[in-house]
Length: 195
Ligand code: IMP
Ligand code: MG
Image (cartoon, rainbow, N blue to C red; front, side, top):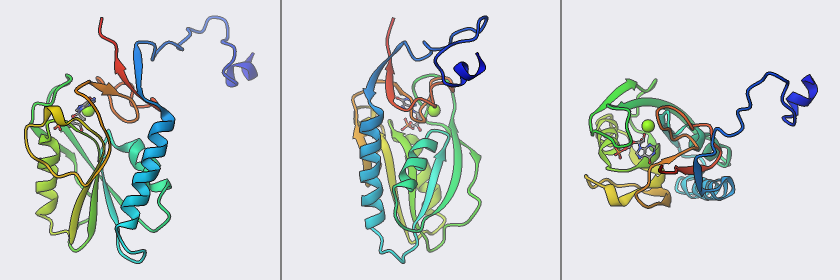
């Protein structure tokens, strides 16, 4: 029974099946579509700097954790990484615009070629706050990569040099993105079905 469970084919008697945990979702972007586009972005971002040049990626937690992981594994060059965690107030499906820094970077950015790695740009409030505080640290260059772009909801004009996919105004989950901290571990991007 134990071996069968590990292979994922049979549940031990008495266990609660948990197979339908993503049953209420519709797939917007498949795992394959994401993998292909992220690999393309990785090549573009890496090629924008000469091989010997510094390339420092600043990932915004938690949403960008899978995007970053797949992105750097597709980059055939040296990169350095740092992490910043921000939290927008409120747990709902729309951002309040108030951003709180939960974890700051470990290292300074002075003179470095920095690329911010973010999951999604929606109203743009989070990203414009991040760009402002990071620009104040005097990087040599500052660019931004977002896996997803929802332009219909933009409140502030924010520059994003690298965009994975532009999507309609739907609340999406998966591949790092959450709803109430859940669904971040989905390998695809889905939409929660209404009703
Ligand atoms: P913005 O400040 O409105 O641009 O929102 C940015 C942040 O809101 C993102 O980093 C996400 O954490 C969250 N967010 C915006 N849209 C979505 C969505 O469709 N699904 C999950 N999180 C989202
Ligand atoms: Mg979130």
